[in-house]
Length: 408
Image 1 (spheres, helix red, strand yellow):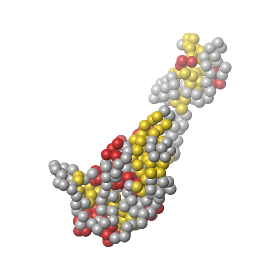
Image 2: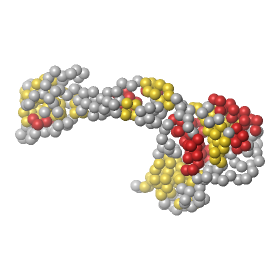
Image 3: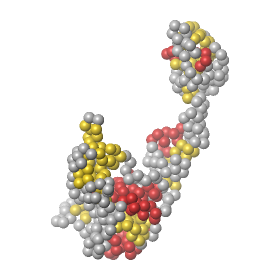
Image 4: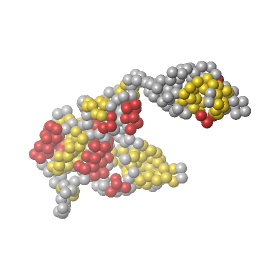
């Protein structure tokens, strides 16, 4: 078999996006169960927040003009017309030269445009107040609709719900929300040497299945439902049977192992026989032999067998598929930082290189310490805080040079 031609990562992702047209249906969930879920459609606020102008401090509701020029040596004197009761509409009107006592959160009475903080006042008697500091219109109050306006887009379609979003939903009266149904991802490990982690003893040449568990955890982290289908032997019949089952019960299939070119690797033959291979070989390191196909309208992503390669290419391709299904903005990593690399790093030109790094601060600089090791060593990922990227147009980076770091 001829060795595959690797294509740039950007082109690989474009090819993948062009063939994924499926958007999942929605389901309604209680807002307390919605954290991290993706909003199906724009959420419009049905009401203003707050629904009335209210005080943000304990004090006195006044007309700001009645306080102009007030000071401790020459205070403004007003009469106290009454008091606002929490949870009730005030029946008192603030007229020129008067004020109304108001608690934090109380409704601003008619005629008032500001609140004087209680610590800036002195009671002369039960009906007379001395104001020691002036206020401007709008001071110490929040206007009706100042926080959220009726008809405003509260949470946009495709957004992942955060704790503050849940609070806002509750604040405008939502208890349920439409979210995109979670995509189901079937996960298959291939290889005659792979055995389940439950095996009490390893025979010579055997290794326990790592990839099904790391890939499953990543799928769950990204909003999908992992569906492990176990370990499949390197035979055409086993691979075809496993893919048939996976395609019937999931939206996407991920295989690990069997994507490198060799006499025993049947994945490409099986995928091309059942559907279409849209790419085989990506200009990334590690992860060059990644294969992506479409079978019966479902993406089938075949990741390299080495754990580090599988994790990195999973972040690049499986996450892109889930983002597409969920209608979520595509990002390979959620947070990226700039850091100074702490040793010289070589890189093969023409390939985007990902290297595990540990971060530490030195003065006002963020430093990245490379975690060196082969792509078969899961320990490099355990020790790392993220991945430093060396772009394909560079042939390395010198010690002290800046690199972009994608945080895990």
